[in-house]
Length: 88
Image (cartoon, rainbow, N blue to C red; front, side, top):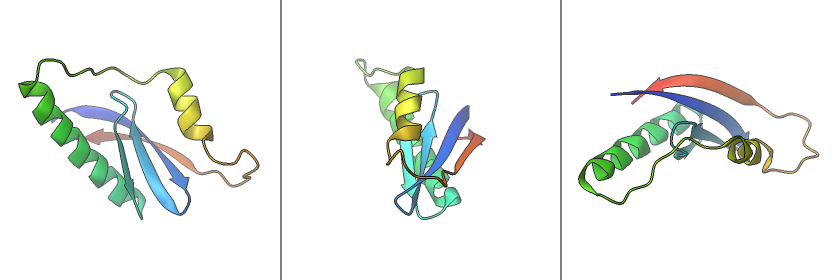
């Protein structure tokens, strides 16, 4: 189990959770559901990372974070973001 930094964002009626350490995402109907999906994705990635040799992993860049936060219509006035720590 490790510590991860997660940015949550509401998009098109869903919540999207982005892990800053590795760029993995999870999506769900609620914040908790998105985080749970993200944890599952991180666990799956870790299992593959430990057994495969050519798997790339790196923190996301500031540009990628900016794209994640602004991917929707820029005219939207009610943007909701949340930053969390997650153990997976």
